[in-house]
Image 1 (tube, rainbow, N blue to C red):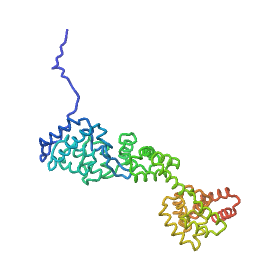
Image 2 (tube, rainbow, N blue to C red):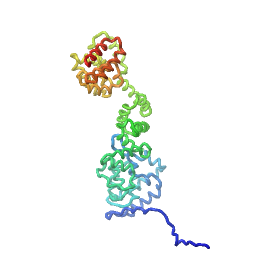
Image 3 (cartoon, one colour):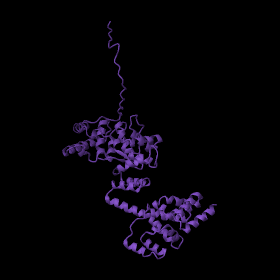
Image 4 (cartoon, rainbow, N blue to C red):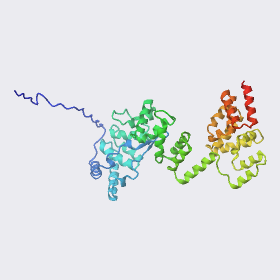
Amino acid sequence: MQVSISQTEWPEITLGRPAPTPERQNASSSKPSSEVLRLKTKILENYSGSILTHLKPSDCFRSDLFGGFRFLSPRTNWIREEGITEREEKLLRLFFEELLEELEGHEIWDGELFSLCSAFLLCEERLQDYGKLLDSFSADLPEAKDGRTLLYFLGFSAQTPEQMPEETEDKVRLVSAHKTSGLSEEQKFRLYDLVVSGKEPNLLGLAYHYFRTNPSGLRSVTVLDAMLSRRLQEFELGEVDSFLKDYETRHSIRDRFFLLKRSISRDLLKDWILEEKRRNGREELSESLRETVSGSEDESLFERYKILKEQGLAHTLRPFELLLLWNSTAASELEVSLVDLEKLYPDSYLTHRAIAVKEFKERKFDAFLDRLARTGRFQYSSEMLYLKAVTLLEIGMAEEGTKLLESLVYKFPDSDFLRLALERYRKKSG
């Protein structure tokens, strides 16, 4: 027996979800005039499929390394890149100028029209005109809301964006949270993962801002260092300088050299090498000065100090020599010299070494230890190690200080000075 199953008995079932309810037009908004519609149609007929029809405001900003945001031009030369001829370019600009003029003084509800004008002004980097454009569209229009959010991120508007719909991009949500209250731990992790995965490359600066002090762990700054190193040319000079100073504390001079070699000009690289030599005490003295100093070897410390002071090199004297000067009538002169040198060479290892010796002499032992870490390789010289050993003994770290003195005696077995110092401190602590 055949059984007939009709379509009525077994209706077709489909899965789906209701279409989103479109935003209702604001009562105060008007429809575009016939002239506006004519110009809009002309642009769409001739330039459909170009950047003008798909550029979003959220594509036009990047985060800097300081927690702020900068305008990001969507294209360096968008007219040429889109293959638009000179004649087409003239017509395009004419259409848009007429269109922007027609929009002034009206409040219009047309998302497609706003997106077209928005893309044009952003490609042209006309942010002042962009603010005027927003005045011609309802505040409730979704596309215009995106434009207002962009100006808020860039600091051109103080108006905080309204509550964002569920479909808002992660990037926009994170930036809005950062601007209003700062990111939670969970949001920071989300930011890091989006950047490292390559999904949000324009938030690299913000991720660095939050993780620059995380040297280790699952989400460390090391990965961000590598990403920034490959993209330094995208950042401004102040950001690059700040990054290089941070990079220096985490990477060897070899890594820094190769980073700069591929990032800056040859002349700037030469200047950097000279500066590093100066900081490390390896700067070549001029021939005449070298002869003057070497010819004064048999003269007193004060004579050598006078020669070096005239050349702005008093801070290159050895630590023990500086201690002798600070306990002499030249102390005030040396103090003034150091103040000037610190202004000229704030990052010089030799300058920091001279200041550290001064802090030791003034028994500012905690300050001495902090400064010591900023003296580069000089902190491992025998005289600085001796000052460190004495400092540790003076602040009650007898075991560490004694071990350091013992290692110096082992390295310089013929030094009566070191042996006597070790015996004295052993008796004192015993």
